[in-house]
Length: 439
Image 1 (cartoon, rainbow, N blue to C red):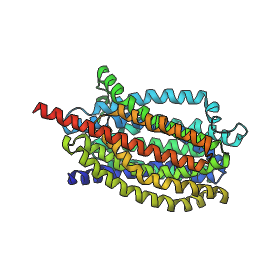
Image 2 (image 1 turned 90 degrees about the horizontal axis):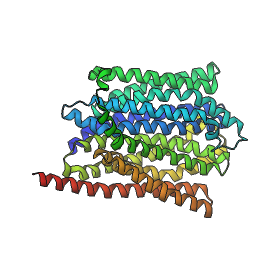
Image 3 (image 1 turned 180 degrees about the vertical axis):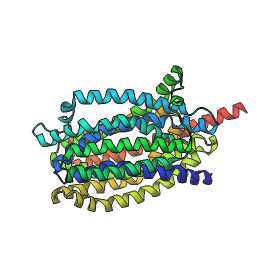
Image 4 (image 1 turned 135 degrees about the vertical axis):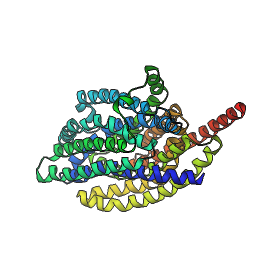
């Protein structure tokens, strides 16, 4: 069992952590460079990135829901390529609708979070959104291939592709923003070019390891498409989308306390998100192991991955507290804003420590046994029913935004982890009983 975990972490976990590190550095690099133009420019661009991140996580949700099928099919020498085609097809449909609605109602959506008098923030957000959104159509295909790398246990190739595209993004950002003076538009164009390079690289690298012809991706039947979308992709993508939407609701609550607190919160949550997605690599590696594990080993495997996740959480929380200083210095933020950023980082530190445990149980455990619908249920109960109620009660009574943010994140992580563990125990018992009856 320990060999399986070690192998999964080496072949999937570490490469996925690196991939997540490179992907989150995209927005971090944009943020640091644009913050040097002005804090309000940073606020506008960061707000757009939060909105577009909903779509990115939906795309990831669609494809990670199909990851267990890819891994299983590959293990049993069946046609795994059709699942990649299902993911690409559905992601393109969702992205086209999402971006169309965003384009039509962009002003109304931005002004939900920013007072109409903050014209610099609004104008910056719209200028960036109009160009950067193109990159997310490209992501519909590239993400499917990045997830395929995990299923084929060649996640190193995904990390390589993302690393190279990140380097291109940073160089072009610097060139377009500062040397050529293109400002916000330059940052957006740099991101789109980097996304194109990422797609070309990951397709070439996957084909280097295993030939994947385009026509082979679309050999699925309509019945197979409908079954996978209804049972796995839709519940999982909705769960991922709701996860980011609740983040926007938290941003809205913070914005009610003034633009200064909003800017500080966005700085802090950018750093927090940077390390959170690195630690998510442990959960992604656990999904690959759980999907093909013996039924009576699932709980023990999850406990082992949770221990590793807890260690990763401590490491990431320490690095997060260290990074805040150079990040704030390079971003050239004011001393007042920096003081508020520190307050947010301090309350996010314990959340960072426990986050990998819940992530392993939900992303690794529940996804590994194809419980996408229950993932959606845990998100709704923990984040919306309990979390939102708690957040608005604290806003009405305590009226301390830092405490509100802390209690919201703490309670929702604990509730989600508890619900996931109880469900996993029940499902594993049922699986074992079914196995005994078959024997």
